[in-house]
Image (tube, rainbow, N blue to C red):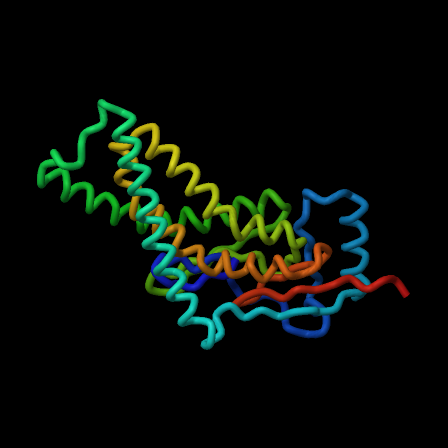
Length: 242
């Protein structure tokens, strides 16, 4: 799933996908859609094999005109999610009398807390992409990883095609899974969760491109098929048999 590097730093699922022809690619595409019925998979594979597909939309999330808005949205996500996770941590401390109060933390503890947040912020970047990859694998795809310096990681499934729901699941999985897991740690163990605050905010901020993808997906037909590209995705519709 494509992401702007933004404040979060993660580059999401993005890589050189199929050529942008009238059909998804000259090279055969592999359907990644384990959650649909066998009959639906057969119909889609038959259409792909016979070339009965047509592109209905091409989305370039990293077009220059979009970048300022994505950067602003990424910063907003960083600030809002950071405030939300901090508020959760404070509420958890109030609910757990044994949790150490922030006001009584020693300078060494504060330095360690800042350093820990920075380390985990960096660590969550590959973890974000690993969740993308795990979701692709669950759908039957074959993920690949790459790196764009300085810290722009990405995961992709080139020459794969997804259902609309499947592509949305791949896009949202890191944001949902890591946020829920992090929030659970914060609530159950606020002292440990305090080290996750910046990482969780960065994960949310870095998902700006994933959220933008899902916003576009919502206006596409339910039966649309999605192929990842270097800077966004192409959407296709199936044509009826001749």
